[in-house]
Amino acid sequence: MVKVIASSLRKGNVVDVDGRLYVVLTAQNFHPGKGTPVTQVDMRRIADGVKVSERWKTTEQVERAFVEDSNFTFLYADGEGFHFMNPESYDQVTMSADDVSDAASYLSEGMAVVLSIHEGNPISLELPRHVTLEITETEPVVKGQTASSSYKPAMLSNGVRTMVPPHVTAGTRVVILTEDGSYVERAKD
Image 1 (tube, rainbow, N blue to C red):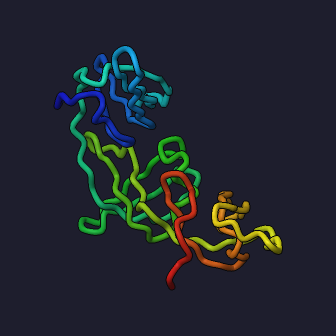
Image 2 (spheres, helix red, strand yellow):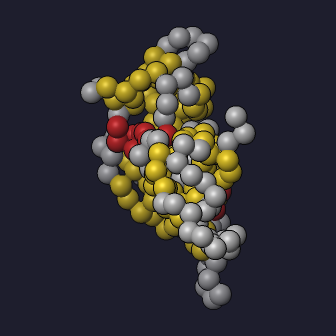
């Protein structure tokens, strides 16, 4: 176990709170005008999947569990869960749908991901920062709508909704930020 300050916690980190392991889902630092800055952390208990929220002073020490981050390739999903393979050792591991959660919509066959392994079990998943997807449907361009800050809703090929600039049409391949599903740019392929 390694002690770190609460403000350094990030999504995907594994912490030990009262002898139980939790994976960090979100971590936000709040600096009010008066009072002590705090870090609000939403976590999921690895043992049973229960979600909890914790609030620490930003300088408070938190125990970070030792996890090994390894490169894996996504193979497929079935009733058992999501299957990944280590490209070096060819070892295969399976993660449950609860553990993969929102990342499931961005996974595609052959995608390289980073899995955090604790005592031989995968506990969290890190996607590539950007993915390229196709727009399946979007609203037509409104004539005269030239404001650069105006965006319109669009449906991606993975079923996720996002907002895109007016010039993007159905069939266009776009780069999406996996962190929040937001539009980055048109794909250059």
